[in-house]
Image (cartoon, rainbow over all chains, first blue to last red; front, side, top):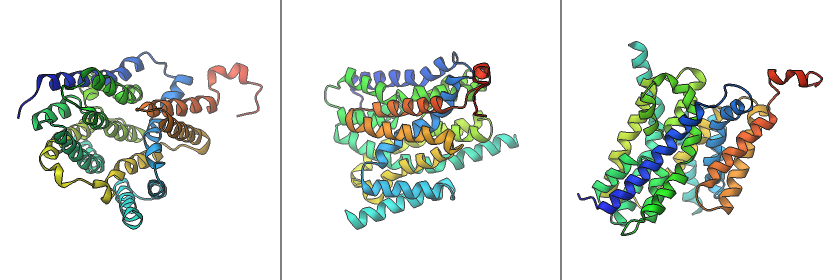
Amino acid sequence: MTIDPVNFAAILAMGVLTYFTRILGFLIADRLPKSGPVRVALDALPPAVLVAVVAPIVMSGPIEAVAGLVVLVLALRLPLIATVVAGVAVAALLRLAFI
Amino acid sequence: MTTRLADFRAGLVAVFPTVAAAVPFALILGQQATAKGLTPAEMLAMSSIVFAGSSQLIAVGLWSTPAPVAALALMAFLVNLRHALMGASLSGKIAHFGRLRWVAAFLLTDEAWALSERRALDRPISRTFYFTVALTLFVCWQIASVLGTVFGAYLEHPETYGLDFTFPAIFIALALGFWKSVRRTGPVLVASAVVAVAVHAVVPGAWYVIAGAIAGITAAVVTAPREAPAADQAAGDATP
């Protein structure tokens, strides 16, 4: 149960810079306008970030693509937890069958 | 009081699937950390001070002795830069938190942010809702990543069970919650997805998230209907 000082320095440096990324958005958002193109951009930000995070994962292979498509269709009808369980099950079954 | 209790329950219900996704991830993280010679105490320090899953997993991958401090710090900054985008979007919606905003920022994760933005579509985000979601994730993250350093060896191939697909499944479902119309949201999703995949294939690191997000919001601005202040010039346009 020991902590190496160099390891701790690395952890602390990572933590400080990560916290900076977390408050950076708050700091700049307070100076941003409430309407106009910048507002349109901010409103589009959540779906844009979500899709940017997910798209490469889903496109990383045929099984992921199929499972992603299943989730996309199911999400329109089922609640979140059911959609996720179904998506995970499809991914697991496809891997069982093809890998 | 009833509202607070209702928000607490809504927070727990909302966070449950993301906890189910984060726990296997944290177990793998702990197991990888042990393999790199990190102690359970160091794992706990990292999980509680950094508290950012992807960057922690990449950090453990990069770890060596002595620790490459500058490289690890820069990597964490780049991987987590997406928080700035999330914070900018969330800022106005939690302005009523007051000074607690700075605590809320420390607990900001992809999951807490996505669930809060989804919540904000229907009603204001209360402190109770946000901190129920964020603190539940925080506590579970600590426990699971430390347990991973102890038991991780038994969970070597979680992808066999499709568990790694939990995270993308949640994000796809949440992204659809922001759907407004083909004209408004379609270009955002297409531009973001195409650019993210292309940049991911070509540029190493986490730049694809930033690039995809910028492409998405650019598409939104370019395709947005003209607003009232520009009406003088747009008066002759046929578009309503």
